[in-house]
Length: 157
Image (tube, rainbow, N blue to C red):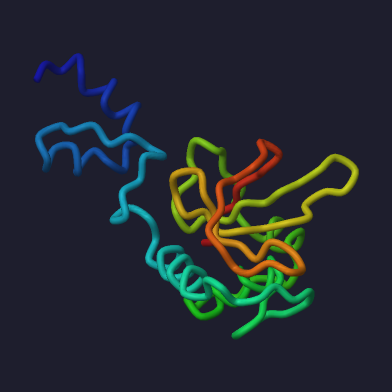
């Protein structure tokens, strides 16, 4: 590999991946295309916990372990994984590191917003454009495709 390619690889993969690139024969690591090994153990665990609650009924104000509202599910899942979050979806958004859609990974939080109302719903990103969430009264915790582009993403550190 010529020296002229190294800066391009480093700029695309990030300086932190330089040793990884050298160790694996200059394979390009694409940011945002995370494999399960790249997601944080905290986020992976929270995602597993949310998925384990599939079928649990929605109840406004509920934080588990058997009934949930949207932010109650995310609060419960991350608490069981070892990280405390604030209670509401808006507070959770304000407490996360905001990331782009391109940078989202499994286990990140997905915040639904509307102009004039702000953040009104939250779920946990499951990959492939889907979230685990507690949608509304009469529904249960389920895996569902993200249905709008009016979303922001946040990472729990």
